[in-house]
Image (cartoon, rainbow over all chains, first blue to last red):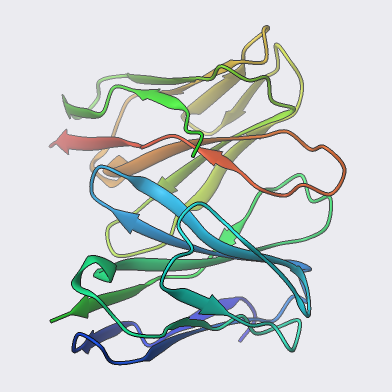
Length: 113
Length: 113
């Protein structure tokens, strides 16, 4: 299926565990982004990537790691999950110089207990 | 991080009423975008604006790019129950290859049938 897909859709994990959220897009968009959405904070950028093997920190990168070995995949890893990382995570992608902003995935709801 | 001032924060209206929301920024933008987020989904682009003073419609939705390039508004006419959701504004200053968006905190819209 064409588009941007995130997995899993829901995840419950324990404090201190490592968890990886997956993001896959089929358009070969250069740019990919990870956001978290929390009540009262809107969408906050965690990390972004301008191309394969190029990543950069966003607004709230602490506690997260990303990689981008292939253009189509942009996994987000929480190395040691904390309760404050309970959130809804959205992945998005964008073409170079696209006038159309981003296309978002459906999100992953992560609960850290 | 930088955020846009989006108002109102929430609205509760009767079906058939018109809705207006706006965003202001201390910085100028080259692009203003309006997204809608349905419950449990990622944001979806509604309208994109590229020129100061531009007025663009998409069905019952109308958005304008402020003449100062520091503000934008979105109007929804004759609201219906499926308009329920969170509406986000986003601004972009396309300096070189910068694809990052600056986001408002969202306007939560509830429609009473």
